[in-house]
Amino acid sequence: MQLYKSQNLKVYNSLSGKKEIFEPINEDHIGMYVCGPTVYSNVHLGNCRTFMSFDMIFRYFKHLGYKVRYVRNITDAGHLENDADDGEDKIAKKAKLEQIEPMEVVQRYTVDFHNTLQKLNFLPPSIEPTATGHIIEQIEIIKEILEKGIAYEVNGSVYFDVVKFSESNDYGKLSGRKLEDMIANTRELSAQDEKRNPQDFALWKRAEPQHIMRWPSPWGDGFPGWHLECTAMSTKYLGETFDIHGGGMDLKFPHHECEIAQAEACTGKSPVKYWLHANMLTLNGKKMSKSTGNNIYPSEIFSGDNDILSKAYAPSVVRFFMMQAHYTSILDLSDDALLASEKGYYRLMDAMDNLEKVKIGSTSDFDLAQWKQKCYDAMNDNFNTPILIAHLFEAVKHINLIKEGTETITEEDKAILQQTLNTFAYDVLGLENQVVVKDDSNTLDGVMDLLIELRNQARANKDFATSDQIRDKLTVLGIQLKDGKDGTSFSVN
RNA sequence: GGCAUCGUGGCCGAGUGGCUAGGCACAGCUCUGCAAAAGCUUGUACAGCGGUUCGAAUCCGCUCGAUGCCUCCA
Image (cartoon, rainbow, N blue to C red):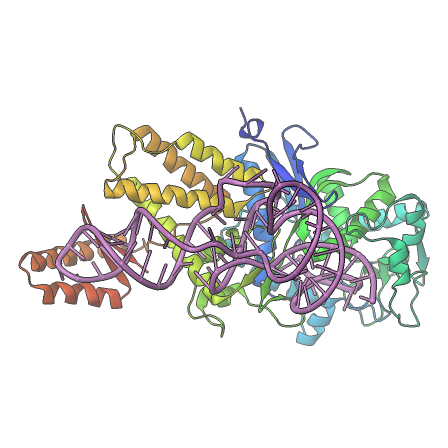
């Protein structure tokens, strides 16, 4: 039996503003779409947090036994620089700046994106479609919306008619906006705007002569509007209605609102059952942003090469740090917070290592079944990873007590504990045990065994000068000796 | 200006009507030749002011502060 049949998962649906029992449209299949990155620059850590939240969600769905089709797009057509007439997209702008082909820019940053996610131990999505690979599908959708009379063409551009759409649909239901309010609070617009109403948005934009990313269309050469690709690709791969649509909180309006409008204009149906929004990672209390430069890159975290950092952090430490906060909460990045997470992470990993070596007893001092279910309960409550981690630390405490000989565990329970810890820490949270430098471990272990033996001989002879010298010099080298009841072990930091 | 969200002990961060997560730091103790590691113990925190309630960090109102969206951004 699949696990999901015995677990009662609830998710917070942005559309209803409530936690709802999760029931996929089709029994055991889940269709999940997440708005991916715009590949005109390196992804920063804030981008990674959103994708990591959905990676965790994807992992948990899979663990529960669902068959998941996870689609995460690559936005390589670029979004409009302005909604005004200069109509140059971001990728084209960057390309000209660097005197290279737009697709070269796209390629470079797509590779960077993949490399970064791989370091952070992401699972690849089922499909990773590109916007430029789906121009035809986007044009088809525009035709359909035009036929329905909810869009209009002006000088080779096509705009979605929000006011017309609102006559029969609720534009603003996702972000809690009212069209009247939006109209009342309209900002001053550039005079030459082609739109009938400021709330209208582009489905297709005419390409100016200098615009190098362009495709032919029934309305002339141009490029698709920036909300359309997600509608085209989600519909193509997941159908007109699918289970989960995710993305960053900052995409809620207007991007996701417009996606709903486009899909409803075509099909008359609400495209998504559960809208999930991941919250922002902040730096200095402010949202990370490419345009303002308030950001930090994953490579800087891994190398420690940034003024706010006192040291380098392993990718898994970053992952652990992010998983210690709920995905719907804002999380602020700081060196202190990373330092604290790093310690906790290593403590968890140490305990998981130690569990392998622990002695078997005839009874167990803690209720494994109950503990395991608490872990599931945490995840079932809208993917509450911080609570899950709290439970993981409860297990850490027991492992350490067993190791000390204060508590015991049966062989059967030990297996359950190991399997459960592995499941949640590695499979669901996506952590990796990077604490041990295993590459040279044979040599290192041999050398360390020798040093530990020499030190113990010195201690037996009460030659503490020698024994302390061995220990202290190793400490300086980043190797820590740990004297326990069963002898001395070591860890490399 | 409009619409939202948030403000939790030294720091990070859950919770959201009574049962007061967790991590890190700090202190004491146990262990140790001394340490480290590990364990145990201790912290009665919920921006402020009112209100509802037998009872509020949790609900309501106001004030203050911060942030997000309204314009490309995960």
